[in-house]
Amino acid sequence: MLVDAMNTTRSGRPALTRPDGTAPRVLVVDDDPDLAEVLTGALRYEGWEVRSAGDGAAALAAARELLPDAVVLDVMLPDTDGFAVLRRLHAVRPGVCVLFLTARDAVEDRIAGITAGGDDYVTKPFSLEEVVARLRGLLRRAGMARSREEGPRLVVGDLVMDEDAREVTRAGELIDLSPTEFELLRFLMRNPRRVLSKAQILDRVWSYDFGGRAHVVELYISYLRKKVDAGREPMIHTVRGAGYVLKPVQR
Amino acid sequence: MLVDAMNTTRSGRPALTRPDGTAPRVLVVDDDPDLAEVLTGALRYEGWEVRSAGDGAAALAAARELLPDAVVLDVMLPDTDGFAVLRRLHAVRPGVCVLFLTARDAVEDRIAGITAGGDDYVTKPFSLEEVVARLRGLLRRAGMARSREEGPRLVVGDLVMDEDAREVTRAGELIDLSPTEFELLRFLMRNPRRVLSKAQILDRVWSYDFGGRAHVVELYISYLRKKVDAGREPMIHTVRGAGYVLKPVQR
DNA sequence: CGAACCTCTGAGGCAGCTCTGAGCGACGCC
DNA sequence: GGCGTCGCTCAGAGCTGCCTCAGAGGTTCG
Image 1 (cartoon, rainbow over the protein chains, first blue to last red):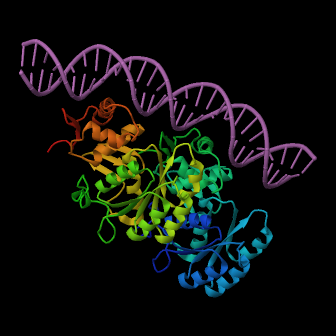
Image 2: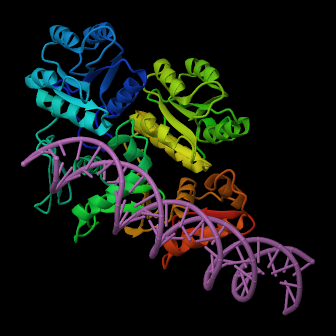
Image 3: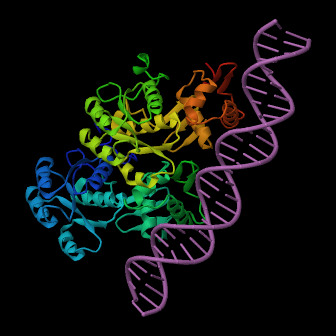
């Protein structure tokens, strides 16, 4: 059904595609059904083909069927340990990239060893933008770029973000951002000229378990303005009663 | 009853259609029968195939039968919680889009996270135009566009509205509108060359629980004229005793 | 173990938005 | 052509939404 969405992302930028032109295939493995649901939805929204599994056994079965390009894998699973699943996944589908989900304090060093192979990980609680960005990075590095333009750089007007280097410049001038500021700006830059509601921003940029109110968004928009728009023609605009929008100056 | 309305939209514009050419299918889930009735009517008027259900169980049964493309889902249901319904809906019908209805002050934070997949929500009390606009957005993004031209832009003469960017231009000139002005103009632009009564406008643009009188409509039409028609050939016309009509100049 | 930084809460204040009321003008019916 | 009705617009009151400042708590790093 998602014919159109498979060729363009929500923002109309060229999407990542497999060499044969179809959408990347991603398998989500998590035993928390709510979390799996949210992740699945977010990744489908990127235009990818997604399946989910609740435990290691189901994951392997699904992997054999779907032949995924990437797997989002919770390290803590009910039946097996994530690393065992990983080994068998690689047997089923050699070269598949894996994005691990892990608790902050747990086994971070073991992850570090595993991810040496080019895989990646995020710690819970994470934001959806974080997961999507990491996955895009993995897929891109695995050769899913649609064109030469499909790179780790986001450009809106004279504002440029290098996602890999975590560097942002405006008119060539380097802008220093905190982690949250960076992620908020990334979300805005991935959706230029589109009004984003505070709720949308909260859903995407803040962790899924964040209970706070939309007031934080206002606050961080205020921070961003001070750094991005400081003394320049503003690019971040408030649309009262609707949300915020980032656009290039002029026109 | 609205047999005719099921084949063409009220405005005659190309309707959203499923890839097989039939009308989009929408399921309305709300335990308030009056509200469900109103919603059902409004969506049928859009030319969509609509069914309604009063609780979670009925919703799932109806979903299995109808296989809807989108669901309008009240978060507060008598039997189940919205989360669970959502998950099971996605199981029955993977990729279905969901528009949540929620009270403004209640549970707003719990919505965060649910809507992550590209789903959307509106807070009660809402206006019907709001609901319809959001649903159209969801369906469009899910690949229901009839053609590539079917986008987030409304055009009447030299008046252009970009719903995503919330931008309106006339003859290329940007027009700044308040939220209510924007929604009123959207309603007019979705029904060009058609006389709309003040009562109709009130029903559509203002929240269903608005107790005010038709005088506000006159007032807001007056505001719109100042901004849209200012110094130009007028597009907004009064039909005394009947209502208002928006038409392109000339012809 | 202290310092710097980051994130979020709360409160105050301003500005823009929405709606009320009233007066005036325009249209149409006798 | 007069009069009643309908519609337009102005002015202002109250409200809401948004911005910003100040500071507390937590985390990271030296």
